[in-house]
Picture 1: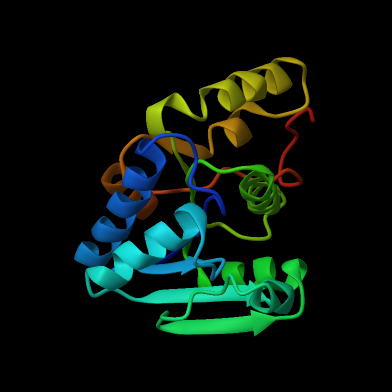
Picture 2: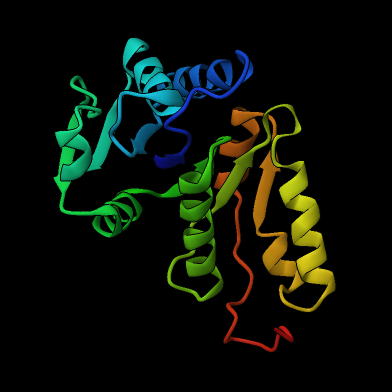
Length: 191
């Protein structure tokens, strides 16, 4: 199995985010799960890749040339594909992945998460998507999504297609039993 991880190019405040990234990397390597990610050596992105590699696992990076030019590409990955831009990066990461896991991160992490989630709602893929809720990081977002749903812009089964857990092991277990809902156009969701 290959899991695409979205996470920060910054380390975050305090050690909990880096600790979680290390745990993700260790668990992936233990279970033979290959990491697909944005190919950088910085932030929690670098931490998760380093942890997979340190434990003998496999890491596939996909990075745009502009970030290679800024010298943030990770030099020691199993594979590293350099692409022209961020659009190609996301498409390539998605093509390589069997599932998605969003660790805490900033605008880029959220943008990647929302794009693959939208693709799932439209039936462009049937891959599971999980949020690793480190220290309640994603709770404000989940409250916002409850409001989006309550206001009629997001069907409940689409909101619930996001797996939310504080445990990477639980996320992997839930990936194996994941069954997607009907797509937005398969039935009336009222949105």
